[in-house]
Length: 402
Image 1 (tube, rainbow, N blue to C red):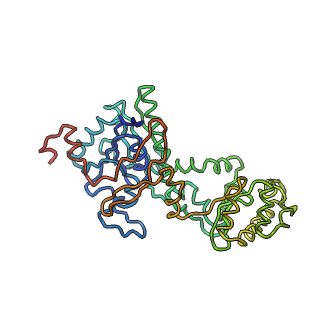
Image 2 (tube, rainbow, N blue to C red; image 1 turned 30 degrees about the horizontal axis):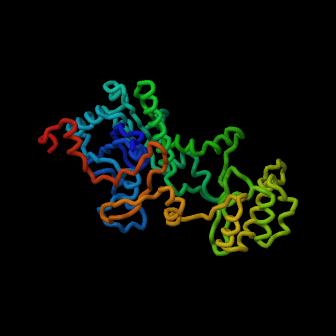
Image 3 (cartoon, rainbow, N blue to C red; image 1 turned 90 degrees about the horizontal axis):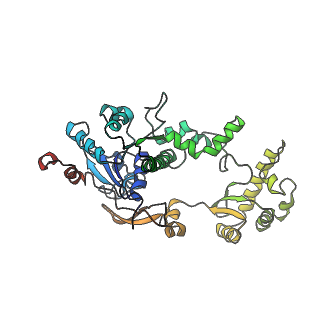
C-alpha cells in the first residue's frame, strides 16, 4: 500500500530531540530519511537515562525514540570530502532538516541562502531554541532552559515554593510537533505552487503553541496565569488530583449536579451535596463573580479530598466507570501507560528488535490514515550503516568511499 511520503527524500543533520523527532514523523509516513552524523555519532546514542542496565551496544532511549527507521551516514563535515558528500546529498533531496545552530551551518555553506540559490525547489527546514530572529536567535537551548524562558515552568509546582519543570521534554517535543507540521505544509505548498522555501520554528514557539489557551488568558486579562499545585492553573473548582484511601490518585472533574450528589453519597458525605456554597456546577467551578468565590473553591477542594480518602482506588474506579457524566482517570505511571489496553489496541507501542537486547518495544506511529497509512520502518541505524551505499548512489568511486 502506498504511503503518503513514499517519494520524499530527507537529509537530516539533527541531534537530541527537536530535529530528529520531526524526522521520525516523516520517516513513519514513508520518507527516506538519511541522518548525517559526525564521526563520534549523535550524542543521544550514548545518553543512558535512569535505571538503564541494557548492554552498551544498545542505543540510548533518546536515540531510539528519535531515529528508528532512518539510515545513517557518518561524515566529518569539517573536511572537504565530508562536506562534498553532504552537498551532493542535498542536491538529491526534497527536504534538508536540521536543528544545528545557524552560525555553524553558514560557516559550512549549508545555510538557506547558499543552498536555495542552487536548489530552488528545496525545502530547507531549521528549528532552534528561540526562533530565527531576535537578539537570542543563536543562543543555545536545553529543555529546562526552554521551559523557563517559555513560561511553562511557571505553571508547574505548588502554589508556594519554587516552580518546577514539567516531567517530560515538552519544549523539545512541542517544537518538533510544530516543525513536522511546518515541513508537511511546505511539501504541500511545493506540490501545489511549485516553490521550495524555508521552514522555521523553535522550542519557544512550540511552548507558546502548547500554552495558547493560558497565554490568551493573560493577553485578555493583563495578569499571568499562576501555578496551582495539583490543580489546573486556568480552571477553578474541583478539577485536579485527589488521593484515594489506598494512595491511588485520580485526575478528576465533576460536571453535573446529579453526579455531584451521588459522589458525595458514595464518599459518605451525603449532606454536603446540598450545601449552598456549592450546590450547583457554577458555584463549584468558582464561576460566580463575587469576593467569596475563591474561598468557596478552596473549600470544595478540601471537601473532595476528604471524600476521596473514604474509598479505595478500585472502589472509585468501579463507581466512576459505571457513569458517563463524570470525567476521571486514575493517574498511571509509565509502565501502566505502555501496557494500557488502549495503548496496545491503537499500536502506539509496537515490538521491535534492538541491538544488544533483541526483542523489545518502541513508541510507534501515532497518526492513523485509512487509505495511505504510515508505518514504523525498523530499528535505529548503526552508526554509518548507509555511508558506503549512499556515497555509491551519489557517484563516488570505491577509492573515494574508502
